Every structure is written in structure tokens, then in C-alpha cells.
Image (cartoon, rainbow, N blue to C red; front, side, top):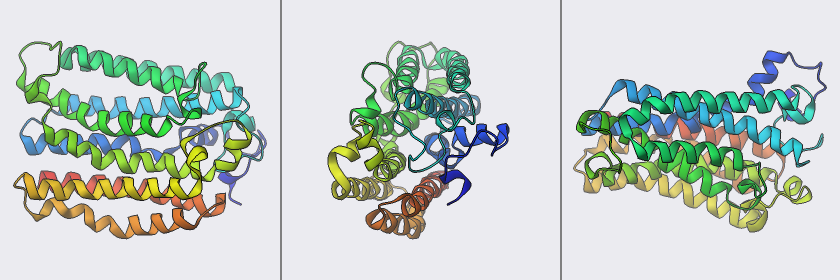
Length: 318
């Protein structure tokens, strides 16, 4: 069992290392890759704006980090985690970092994201206000509040929408708004959100959601015992694995759509070079049931998000 798979005592890991674990760097591709794809599409469509793109990237990573901290804290407060919980170390439960400090880190992350959002609002207007506030509220509500969405089978939908569809389309939208609009918009203008952006977002929504799917398949037994009703708990192992396969298939259908309908050459099919990663991850998910078997699948899925997103972005730019 590796250091990250057990629940160590407070003195086992240096504090800086504990904060790294809490920030979950192995799933950061889920925050960055959708922004990269949205920016690549903006380059392809001739509406690339560097400052809004950079702001969108940092905003997405801060929202993701804040959600990770909040999830760690609220799961500890609600007694969902235990010393025997599967998967990666929960820093609040293990005592590596006091729970109140983890919560404070969540608030700080969301606060910094809010400050970046002020700049993006000056470009994208009211739609960005709505998206930003909804993202922060949903991040807290994932594990916190009277009806935590992650514990009521809504976590997959949350990931699909906010870290997939909204992350890609929002990144494209702020860049297009910066270049095409002369005033701050109150509504989304058609030229700032074409159909291609919505379709492109599905390429990331599927694989990003699959990170959560693997996580929840791994934790089915612990979540069931802790009263956490994730979608995986409701569906069981078989149909959760079907969900993983379908979401992967949706991702690979997107570059085919661009090739067939958008007049882009075969270069847009570059994401198919990541198929070996997808096949490897899928095999692990289809056969794994315990932490030792599914943690590698979680890491491999994160690698797939990064590889697929990078190749798709490259294809759009080229």
C-alpha cells in the first residue's frame, strides 16, 4: 500500500506534502484541459484573446481546487470518511491538516476565483456572473449543505456540466466576447457561442466526468456504508462501468463530427492517438473492484483527459 493509499498519522507526512495531497494534482487535467480545448477552438475560429484565456484557466483551476478542499472538509464533518476509507488520503479525516484550515483553503480558493471572475464579467457580462456564482455555489453544495449533490446521485451531472460543458464553452465565450462585442452583454450573443463550441465541450465533459465515475466505483462500498448515495451506489458496478464506456465513446465521436461537418482535415482526428490510454483505462475499470485496482484506473483516466484534450486542441489549431 502506497503512502497515498493509507491513512497516516499527522506526523507521517510534512505539512507542505499534505497540502499537495489535499489539492489532488493527479486530477488537475480535469480543470485545465477543457480550458485548453476552448482556447484552441477560439484560435481555430479566429477569436483568440490571450488575457481572457489565461484568466479562464486560473479561474477553472481555483474552482476545482476549492471544490476538492470543500469536499474533503464536508465529508469529514458529515462522517462520510473513515480511517479505512478506500482511495487517496483525506487530509481532514487523517489529521494531516486541521479541518477548519481545509475549509479556509476552500474559501480562499473560491475567493481568488471570484476576483478573477470580476475581470471576466467586465468582458462577458451577466452570463459570467450567473456561471461564476453557480459554480461556487455548486462547489460548496457538492458535499455541503442540507442536500449535498454528490451524495444524492447528482455529482456526475455536476462534473459534466461545470467541468465539461461550461468550462469549454465559457472559455470560448469570454474570448469571443472580448473581440466581437463592443459593450458588456446582458445575454449570450449567438456569435459568441456557436454550435461548434457546444459540441467541442462534449469531448471534455465525458472524460472529465469519468474521473468521478472511477472514483465513485472505487468507493461504492464505503459510500454505501456512510450513507452517501452517489450515482455509482445507485447504479451498481455493472451500469457504472457502462456509463464510463458511453462517456468515453461520446468524447471520441466529437472529433469525427468536426471532421465530417466542419470542413476540418484529418488532423482533427489526432485524439484517436490516445486510444491506447482509453483502452487501458477502460479495461481497468471493467475489471477492478478494489483500491489497488481502481486507483491506477483513476490516474490513467486523468492522463486520458490530458492526452485527449491536448491532441484535440492541437488538431483544432493546426
